[in-house]
Length: 160
Image (cartoon, rainbow, N blue to C red; front, side, top):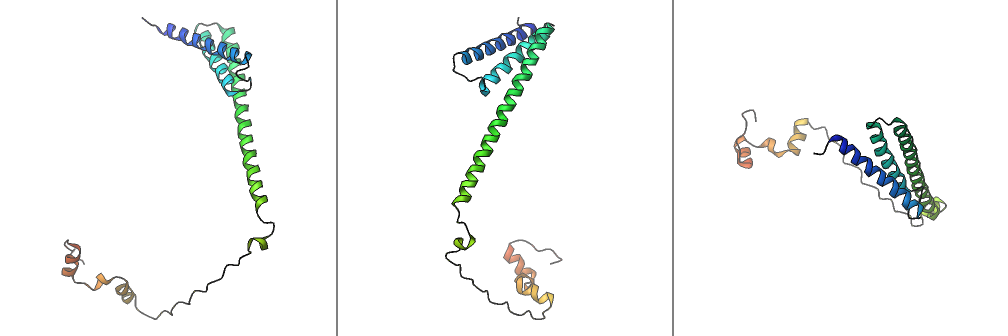
């Protein structure tokens, strides 16, 4: 049967293979040492091997691998910061190029003046009662309950 110790050992072997593969790919020039793939593989390998070392109470190896994890984490953080600042710089350059393409003065922007349309003034408000305004806006206020029931197809409350 497969025990927990066997599972931890298998994770350690997986970490060892990940670390060795990363080193091999960098040595052959397939990956860059400053790439996120390499740093992630190194971090994963060191973390798994450090976990196995801690499980087996081999503290010098566990400590060395945890230092390796911290270094890999810092490298990944810096890669993310560089990518973010490069993206921000590209956005800034695109915005500056857009601004440079705009006319220099506001007078050049308005080469075709837009005609102004003056709206007619509203009719003066007469002194009508609130009830008159409501009846004008809502014709159902003048209907009987029978008319409302016929209109809606439902019964009308007694308060209506």
